[in-house]
Figure 1: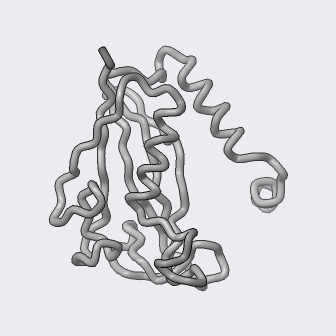
Figure 2: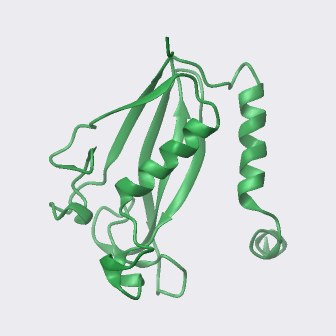
Length: 170
């Protein structure tokens, strides 16, 4: 296990190139290739984390815990249809408290802003048709996504999710 950990954390491989190759293989296989009947799901996910030494870790809402806790959160995209699903891309969410100038720091991005970046990346890997978003069911809306997370100033009881359906153009 230590060798695997060392390989993953210390190898000079480019994770974006590895991911691009993985997605290329999935698109080339008829069993997993994206098609107009599938969806692009956008979600945030997180886990509790002790301390703050790990980048992006802060007192925030990691959905797996169900309350404000010290943790790390990422915004992710996933391709799915009725038969198969697989992750596309992920970006870590950096809470404002981790940045020198807080919310006014040029590096600060909200979860909906990260979701927009990931949607663009999903379109760049040739998902069929257009990506059309719809509001996910939820008690509040923030930035076009249904949210009830602290980023919107709402109750801290749920995480957020949005789904986009791909449709053929023309």
